[in-house]
Amino acid sequence: MGLLPPSSFHDHFEPLTDPRCPNARHQLIDILVIAICAIICGAEGWEDIEEYGQAQAEWFHQFLDLPHGVPCHDTFRRVLSRVNPDELTQCFISWTEALRDVSHGEIVSIDGKTLRHSFDHAASKAAIHMVSAWANRNRLVLGQLKVDAKSNEITAIPQLIKLLDLEGAIVTIDAMGCQKDIAQAITEQEADYVLALKENHKTLYDDVMLFFADARATEFAGIDHAHYKTVDGDHGRIETRTYWLTSDIEWIEAKGSWAKLQSIGMVESRREVEQSVTIDTRLFITSSTVVICPARVSMLPLDEADCSDTDKGVCDGIADCGACAGGQRPRGGLPGPV
Image (cartoon, rainbow, N blue to C red; front, top):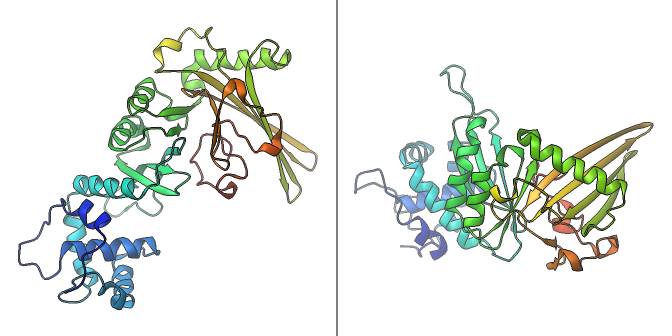
């Protein structure tokens, strides 16, 4: 008999209902541990999971019972296909929350993705679409939910938010998630939000765009704001990104309908390739009033931040500066420039 799996895994998955009869040959916890380890290491199918388990059998025997050895790929398929997906999701989220190194100002990016090759034309099965929450600093998926189609992200995001411990975090979502109910759900979890603002909220979008246009024309005269600029270039490309954040928003008529709305932001990306120049502008609304730099683990009030000095590596909470996580983050994670 081997040792129990680490309590941080065993305790969180113990409530999962075993769909088999009581005299099953293989223990459910053994199947779960091997499968998860295999998937983390790149397994893409049932045969891969079995192959990985056999290759690492000596290591698994140190902390798993494995009374009949490593299960075959058919066992992995039968058991995991019959496990209650809602229960498994709850157990998985509970486990990842325990692994997560919670810190104030953690950026959690919520985004929807369609899984490649998940469709089945022969069975008339559409591709699988998932909504996931990614902890940028921990580089860990905190939880995910399957949705019927991309259009259902709006209803799935609040459900996912309620499952997570987001206290003190900053949640970023693209324009589809820029919804009043989602902002309310985030603040109810004692977190802040940064939501991409596009023309799905045309009146607010036009008002914020006009505000920044006027403010830039007067160099933000009389307007408290934070400002930050980055310049990046390689392979003949030069990209300059300029960020502005301000809490001067009392003029916004819809302010009261957005939960704890505190600031608005703009990002302008200027890309130069040879003689070609393209400029892209993005807007954001946020419940935060602080300037955040994960690389420096610092949080400054907006009116105390000096973001004109790029050597300080201070970024505005809308996008990570280059020093943060090595300048790397998953595609589509933050609503800022990728």
